[in-house]
Image (cartoon, helix red, strand yellow):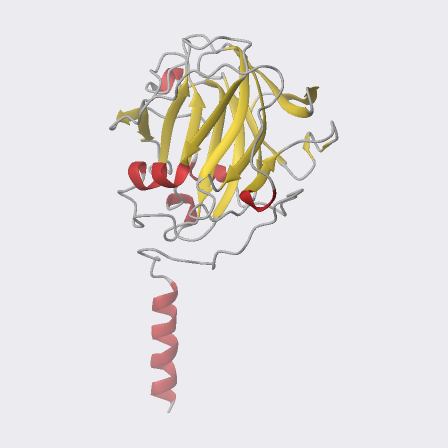
Length: 288
């Protein structure tokens, strides 16, 4: 009996140290809250995002997003159960340096961040002076049901010579990161992340991966660059479910396993030792 008990304990300890593999569906998709989403303590999208963006390897490019210039007023969007709000800021209220329900994530320097009203929305306004920071939340969405990510953004200053393809110039005025359910253990090395960015030198439609330690499951998509007008609002829409299957097809899961683990808005200009400035808001997932 004593030998049997010892064997059981030994096997249990061994299994406890075996890394997870394959698609670990940690949670069943649930209907998300559609209005006034206030996330709890988040699992950071920065889990697999290096503090300063690494050099990347070119992969097959997706189709460039057409340059659609928008007026100050936001366009009409689906209502009710057709959308899940991510950032529809309705007041200038901040808590601990970030909008209510969000956490400030500082990698370098001092953040200059505020909420400013334009038309019927408040937009996040971020400035970087050789700094790197963002805000994050832990929103959970089933992107098989809500495959589209929609947002509005504007850049008023690009970092000098920013280029996501080179580690020493990898700065952007605005980045959106979406983190997904980890596909194994440890989470820091197995969290798939999609990053939609407004770059300077990289062409629109370019896609690439991070080669930094811990960033192997991060994939970039250049949505805008220096050819787009500064000070002009643009409305974007990406099918992130299809982006995941195309750009993250080499991770253990062929498609997302479970719900998203968070969203982050980020700005950095520390590598180019320059400055950047941007606005973002009216961000939501939609069914169509």
